[in-house]
Length: 181
Length: 183
Image 1 (tube, rainbow over the protein chains, first blue to last red):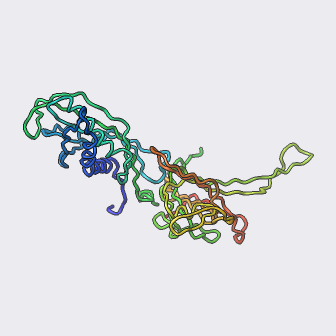
Image 2: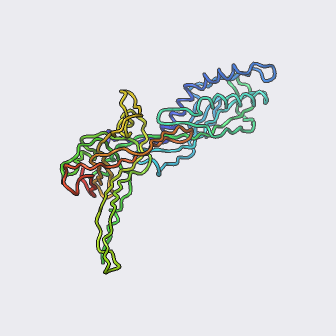
Image 3: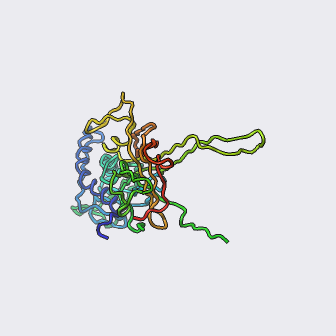
C-alpha cells in the first residue's frame, strides 16, 4: 500500500502551523518590538521562543516560558463541494504563554505576542493549508506555583490564544483502489 | 416479489477527463486501474458533475382523439456540467470557449470558432467498477467566473455542450453513458 496516496489530515495541518510559527514567529516578534518606541508603552522585552518550546498539547505545563501550544480542536470535512479532494476545515488554537514579574508589562507583552502570531498565521499559505485567524482570546493573568523564568525568578503568567480557521486541501489516490472492480 | 438492488443507487464523485480519444461506435473508453489511457485529468472538482441529456419532442395529435398519438424527438442536447477547482494553464486552455493560447496564459476576445474537445466522467460505483459518461466533442459554453475571496475557494463552473459527430451512426453522434465499466 506504500504507493497509495492517503491524506494526512489534522496531523499534517498541525505540523504546517507549527512549522510556520517556528520559522517566522521570532522574526515577526522583532518587527513588532521595533514598532513600540514611545515613552508610554515603550519597548518591552519580548523573549524569543526556541523551537523546542512548541507543543501540540495544552496538557503540558512547561517549566520554562515563553512557550507555544498548537492544539487541534475539531475538523469538519466538506462533503458538499469537494468531489475528489480531501477538503477540511480545522479549528485550531495557538496559544503563546508568557511570563513576567510585573503584570502591566506582562499584559502588553502578551498583546505583542498576539500581534506577532497574527502576522505569522493570518491569511497564510502553509502548504496544504491556508490559515486564517478568527479570534484572539486574552487569558486572565495568573500565578503558577512552580513558574519561573530562565533566571529562576518567580512571577506571573498570561497567555494569548489565537483561534484559527485552517482550510486544508489534500489529494488522495484517484480512484481509491478499494473501489476498483 | 421484486427485490430492489440498492447497491446500484449511485453515491459518489465523478472524475473529469478532457481530450480522451473517442472510441469507435459500440465501444467505450477502456480504463486502466480506473483511468483512461488518453486525455487529461482536470483535477480537483468542487461541485457535482452532471451528464445531462435533454431531448425536445413534438407531440403528434389528431382531430379524432384527445390523447397524444405519438412523439417525435426534434432536438437533442447533451451537456456535461462540472466545476473545476485547479486554476492551471491546462484547465484554462482546455475549458474556455474561444481562448487564444499565449503559451503560458490564455487571452480572449475576437475569436468565433470554439474550442472542441471530448469530455469523460468516470465515477466509481458502490458495487465496484465505474460508470462512464462521455461527450464525443464539446463546446465549453457559459460564463467563466473566477473569484478571489478570503475564506473560500474558487470554483469555476463549466457547461460542456456536445456537438454532433455527423460521421458516426445515428443514435451515437453526441455521447454515451455506460452503467458499469470494469477497470
